[in-house]
Image (cartoon, rainbow, N blue to C red; front, side, top):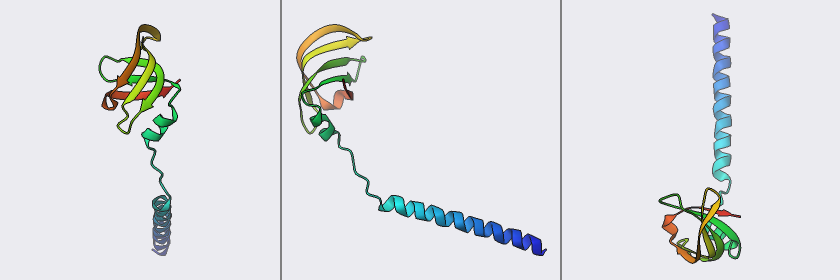
Length: 108
C-alpha cells in the first residue's frame, strides 16, 4: 500500500515538473520578440536584380529585371521573358504585374 503511494507521488511530481517546464517555455515564447517579415521590404531590396515571378493561372513564369514595386506588390519588370520548362518562349519587354496575381517571387 505504501509503495503504491510512493509511486503515485512520484508520478504526480513528474507531471507537475513537466507542466512547470512547459509553462516556462510558453512564457519564454510569449516574451520573445517576434519580428514580422514584410515582403515589401524584401521586394524593394531586389530592385535592379533579375527575378523570376510565378503567376496565377496557367502556370506562367516570367523572368526579368525588377524595375520597381509598390506597397501592394505590383511590380514592374523590364527585359521580361516568359519561361516554360526552363526554356524561353516569348520576349515580352516591359511588363507591369498586379500584386494579387503573383504567387511567388524568386531572386535569380
